Amino acid sequence: MRKRYLFGCTAIVALLLILSVAACQPITAPVAQAASKTTTEEINKAAIRGWFDAFNAHDLDALDRAVDKYYAKDYVLHDPTVPNFSGGAATIKLMIRESLQALPDLHVTIEEMVAEGDWVAIHATVSGTDPTDKALSFWGLNMIRFVDGQWAEEWELAEPAGEEVVGSDISNK
Image 1 (cartoon, rainbow, N blue to C red):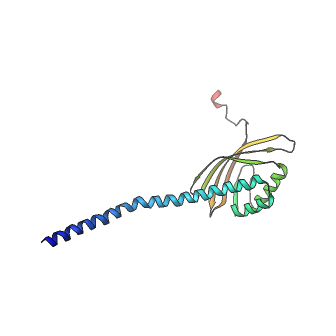
Image 2: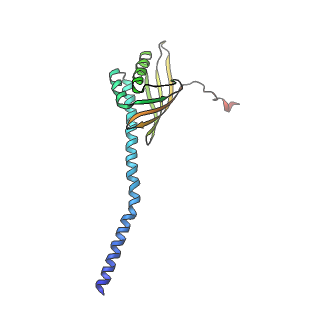
């Protein structure tokens, strides 16, 4: 009788141990998933920083390599000032050369950056001097979708700093 009692107690303890381990599984799975999500987000944010570091250095050969590294070959830009953008990374290289030729001291500063999954949102300020030696300053908001660590698609909106935006005086009426 005593053996049967000890066997029953041992079986109950073993069953409770198995159930308690099984109960912990749902708690650990989301933690592992969150770690991989953070890794993807940090990789994408590092790509943004790496790209703007290369851009601000103004080394055209390094910029070509950065475009090849950070932009998908079929990259698409959605920007109201650049309608019907096509050409992917090759067109980006051309746009960079044209921009730096017109504004040789062009500089981009990332003010804020937020990442969620394959998406990164940035708020940046751009400064430089135009060909007439007039100071140039504007801000931009970008939403960038990444695929395999590269910029695949981007939505961009820019506005001159200090300019009045349509509807900005609504509260004064």
